[in-house]
Length: 465
Image (tube, helix red, strand yellow):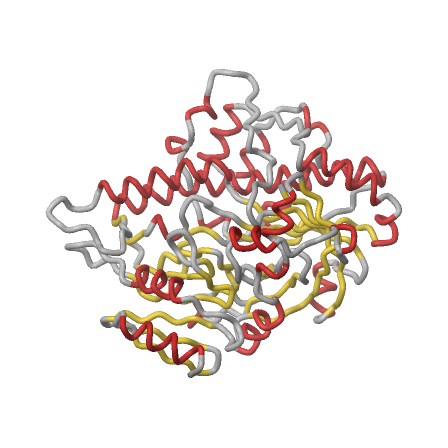
C-alpha cells in the first residue's frame, strides 16, 4: 500500500476525502475544500491537513462573513495553530487572528553590496567578527524617540525617518536612499496603523528610547545570510535588479519580535472573548473577528507590521555600516522587502498568509532554501487559483526537538558554507536535513505557474542567534 493510500484512509476516518492529481492535493470535508500544491516525493502531514481544513471552516454565528478559499504551497507543514505555507482568503468583514499568530510580518529582504566575492573574501575574518558583534552580541546604538514612534504608527515609514534623532546609527545612514527604498517594501501601501494599539513603553516621557528588540534577528529559523550570486537564470531580470554573478548580496529574515507577540496574543485572546455568549466555542478553537472588530485588528496588526519593517531597516543599516567600515564604500541597494506572515486586503478579500509569499504578476519573490541550500529570486505570475502567492521557503521536514537528538551537523569548519551562532543547538535544529529539498519545491511552483525563477543564490556565511 502506497504512503498516499495509507494517508487517504486515515483522513477518510476523520471524514476527509482526498484526491491527488498533477502535484495538487484536494481535500473535502463537509462542503469545505482546501488544496495543497505538493510534489509527490515530499511528505504530506496529516496534522497540517487538519489545521488547514480547520481554518477553511472558520465562521462567525449570525454573520455572512466567511472563508472564500484555502490553499497551501509546497513548504506546507504543521504549525503551532495554523499550518505554515498556508493562504486563507476571507470576505472583507472577516479576520482570523490565529491564522498569522504572533510572528506578525515576519518577512525577508534582499540587498546588494556592490562587492564581488573576491573583494569580500579578503576581509572575511574581520567581516565575520564585526557582524558577529553587531548581530549576535547586540553591540548597536539605535536611538529612537517617542515622537518618531508616534509618527511611524500614525503616519508611516517616511514620517518615522523624518522624526529620527541625529545620533547613534542615524549619524551614518543615507536618508535619501532610505526614503527611496520605502517604495521597495511590498505591501507597505496596503496597511494602516494606529498608535493606540502600540506598547505603552514606546511613548514614555524620555528623550531617547532604545527598544531591546529593534535591530535584532530573533531565534528559530530567522537569519542574516551573506550569499553569492551563483547562477543567472533570467538575464533580463538580473540586469534590472543589478545582480551579477559572483557578487555578494545580503538576505535578512526576521519579523516584529516582541511587538508582534504583544499584539498577536492580545487579539487572539480578544477574538475568543468576543465570541457570542449564547454560542458554543468552535471545536477547532479558532475564533474570528468581524466588521468593526476586524478593522480594529488590522490597525493593531499594522503597528506590528511597521515595527517589523523598521526592524529589517535597522539590521540593513547595521550591516551596511559594517561593510562601509571595512571596504570604504557603500554602493548597496535594496531589491525588495517581502512580508510572509501578515494579512493584506487584496482583490476584494482579506488574504491571510502564514509562511507564504505574495507572488503577484511581475513582482519579486524571495524563496530561501534551508541553511546551506540555495535560495532563489523569482518573479510572481499572479496565479489566482493559488491566491497570488508562492512558498516562503522549502518548509520543515523534521521538528527542532527531533533534530537536536539526531545532531547531524558535525564540524562546522567542514561545511561548504559557514554558520556563525552563539548556540550550538542551532546547527542541529536548522541543519539542511531538517528541511525539504528546495529544488522540487521550486520546480512544482514553476510547473503550476506560480513563479518564474530569475536568479539562484548560494549561501556563504549565515548568522543565527
